Length: 109
Image (cartoon, rainbow, N blue to C red; front, side, top):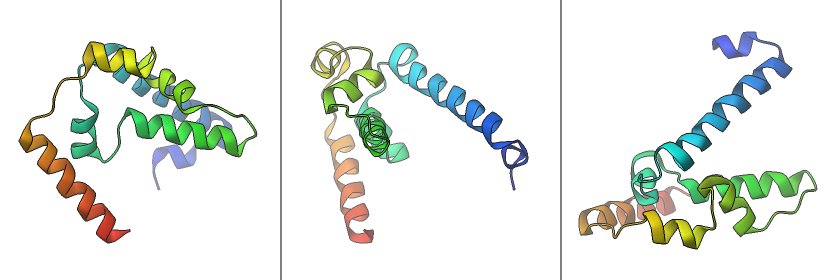
């Protein structure tokens, strides 16, 4: 049991939401140079995953959101604009690591 589990549900939700907003701001404003493929290789998720999860959770609660609207919440601008401004070509090594991780994930799923 973590310390968070000892806190009442409403307060815990507020703390978790605030921490998540900090993560979003960190990726969007403070570290836009961090590449999605690197996040995927190291952590198994990226900004696009966060956007998809947000879109799915919004829909589950009756709030429709397009993929582009959800992505803008994690890029701070339209996705194509962010890609043009921040995305760089991945190295062969990075692409190979990504492909290997995807194959491993597919075999477990």
